[in-house]
Image (cartoon, rainbow, N blue to C red; front, side):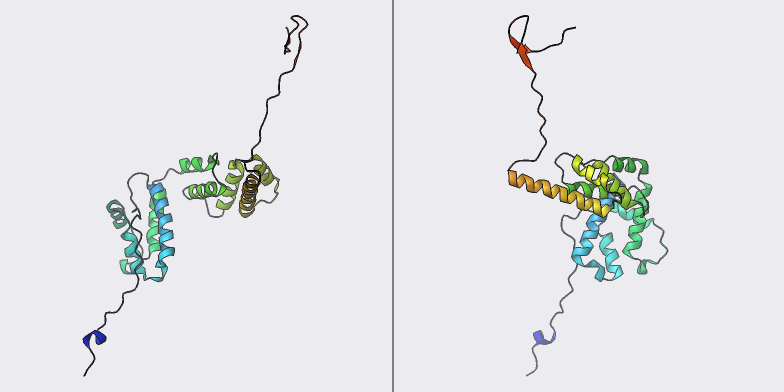
Length: 228
C-alpha cells in the first residue's frame, strides 16, 4: 500500500511576511510634506527593524515600501528619475529621492528658526526634550559633521534647570555625549531626592517681611515708610 496523498503532497509553509501594523499611517504628500515624511521615515525605520525586512530581497522591500504610501505620494514616485532599472532598484534609492523632494518643499530658514528656539518645557523630561531636538534638526539641512555640536548647543541653551546648565557651561571640552550624560544624571538625582523627601524639589523664595515699629506720630505699630 502506497503513501497517502496527504503525506506526499503536504503544502509547504510560506515564509513569514513582514506585514506592518494595522495602524501604520501611510505617507502622504498633501499638507506639510516635510513633517509627514519625517514621521513616516521614523515609522518605516522601526518597521524595518521589527520585521527584519533587511533580510528580504530588494524587490520585496520596494513593494512593501510602495504599499505604505498613498496615491498622491505614489504619483510623486512615478515622476522620479532613477539611475537604476526598476528590477534592481533599492529602498535606499527611493528614500533618497523622497528626502530630496521633501527638503525641496521645506522652508529651511523656518526649520532652523524652530530648531534654534526649542526650549525644554515645564515638566518635560530630558529624554522627551532630546528626542524633540533630534527630530527638529533632521529637517534643518545642516551638514552631518555640524549636527552633533548644534544639538549639544541646543541642549545647553534650552535646558530648563539652571544648575544643570551651569554644570554644562563649566565643561571646557563638552561633547554631545557628555552633555546628555550630565543632563540625565542631574534629572535622576532630582528624582531620587524627590523620592526621599516625598515632595518635589524646588527652590522657594520667600518675600521679606516688612519691618514694623512704633510710630512716633500716631503711637501705633506699622510698616515704616520713608517720607519725602
